[in-house]
Image (cartoon, rainbow, N blue to C red):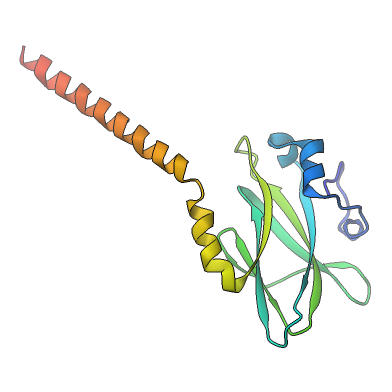
Length: 169
């Protein structure tokens, strides 16, 4: 859900949420979407008899994120407190047979020209493998960075050598 104007918190849960692919078609990426908060809604369910932890990542280049859940009695949104986080990952503990619907208010960092709306839910058992792939998925960019750094270093060395040689003449 992307509000066109400032929407009171009490009305967020009553709004129509559309799939992310539709948001990308309507709003695209970039600073036009970064000026307004984006609200995502997801439901977590623990069907096991033990406590479980689910990890949520809202995407890339997020400036601020606030989580809310609906109060079972009044159906009002209340802020979730004491959510453990690790950089761009947020950990939700679920008790056995617990079901919770979570609303996240995401504000992207406008300073960057483009960002990705890529929310992901991960079971904590798979979290170490996910973070390895998450940080290593742009191997081509790293390789290009190393090559560019090497070329710049060679240019600096060539300029310094040229300066030293021409100084003696």
